[in-house]
Image (tube, chains in turn blue, brown, purple, green):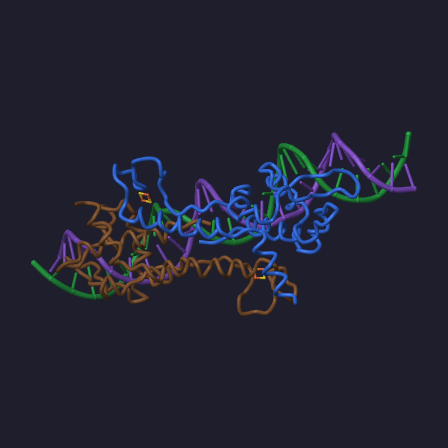
Amino acid sequence: MKLTSKGRYAVMALVDLARFDNINPVSLRDISLRQGISLDYLEQIFSKLKKDQIVKSIRGTHGGYVLSKKPNEIKLTNIFHAVDEKVKTVQCKKESKKGCNGKSTKCVTHNLWDELENHINTFFEKKSLEDLLKNNIERRT
Amino acid sequence: MKLTSKGRYAVMALVDLARFDNINPVSLRDISLRQGISLDYLEQIFSKLKKDQIVKSIRGTHGGYVLSKKPNEIKLTNIFHAVDEKVKTVQCKKESKKGCNGKSTKCVTHNLWDELENHINTFFEKKSLEDLLKNNIERRT
DNA sequence: ACATACCTGACTAAAATGGTCAAGTATAGT
DNA sequence: ACTATACTTGACCATTTTAGTCAGGTATGT
Ligand code: FES
Ligand code: FES
């Protein structure tokens, strides 16, 4: 039950981006240096964020990335979805009537894991980038 | 962000055990057959559950395992702890003052992950084996 | 004695993770 | 026009984790 670096980095990078994206786009190089994330890896992550229209890219010198929505409109769910960091607690396919053991009925723990999945997703749906920014500003005053 | 089979199996097996543990101990062979879990793998899991005194073992013919506490005293936390299914969302060492990037201060997302970890752990602390048994009985009436 | 069932540790194939590397393309500034 | 910057794409790879298997052993009830 752990978070992958991809999800973690995605959020880190977006917080960084949100903080420095005032007028000018922010280059991945800057984020890489500030947050200590490999540039090449960041590129992979941002290509996914772009595909889900969480960021916009601006090419060329002084180019970089910009948020395509306001921080309070970007929920953690959206970010995680974009980078394929999915919460998967059940083993079976949820839609299927079959259980994880291949039997014709759901296993004894299925409901539990499903509850857990909801519990976690609720957390991600509530939190937005804005919440993180606030938290961070508070901490540095 | 996913659950491993070890954690899942541990809970499945214990629910099974709790349901059939009336007078006689339950053999891993039975659990293996009923739940469709490899016997060899179950043995690894139960050796850990035993070490944390969640189950007791009875050797010899007609031997098997028995819960060493009442179902309502066994929380998911205890089970997960026993089989090393730990919830780890932060990257850094929590006790350390250092951040995940090796810097001298915690990263911008540290608080978030820490909150998440608590959120999840709360869930595990509340749920007991008894809850699962109830849920299962309801479903089959 | 013998079948049952717990016990232990070593081993391993496959998947996931966390990246790196190479070779581009687009654009702004000079 | 040239060049530096920075996004873009896709292939590649080492390490770690997962989910087991296998091969022995030991205790005990009948
Ligand atoms: S997890 Fe869905 S049936 Fe077991
Ligand atoms: S997760 Fe703790 S400092 Fe980044």
